Length: 249
Image (cartoon, rainbow, N blue to C red; front, side):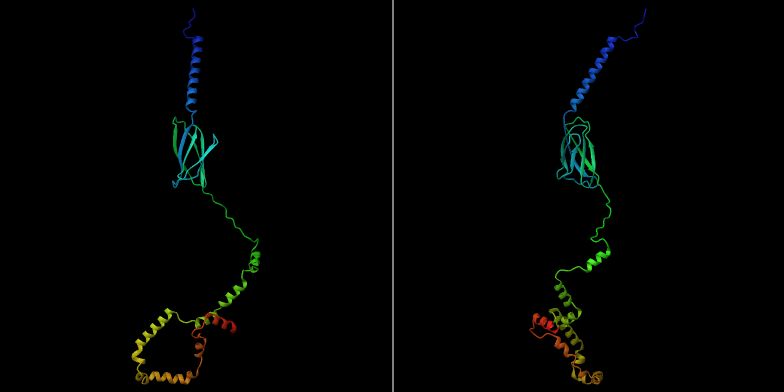
């Protein structure tokens, strides 16, 4: 007599396999239904080091081909599906990649930190001339605008003419006040020595200087008159002085 206690009947095995396949199909269908609905992904894009808001940053969903821009505060909102891959890009920052997690929530939020991108550019020198000799030749041959005005300006700024104008120019209000103050100070400090005619006549040093000036011929010199001739007279206009200077040249 055979012992069949260790052998599973074929019918029972077939029923078990069909139950397993049915349960797997139900679970797969339920899982697909749970993840077939789109979700709202809200977030904020900020700089990684400064944590400043990044406005107009571009958010792109590589799965659906849709994108969005962040507002002035770096906020954005996008409809996505679990498992979608998002790409964040902004000028001056490295691209950031983010995958939507499989979380059974209708709304998901997140903060995207982007790292700054530093690029060292090679030095570029731009020269308008191929060689240094070409530059020197072009510089020497360069024609400036208003050449006549430049020559007149250079002529009027000669040091000799500036010295003449400085001698002919009168003192300003501040200069007159300074001259008057110096004269008052000098007279006050020496009034006991020079204002008294008796002291001047009996001063041997004054007589010695007077005799020395006579021997040198200081009384016959008339070069002091040139200063009075160069100085402008009263009521002379600037146009008249300039015309006299042109006639003299």
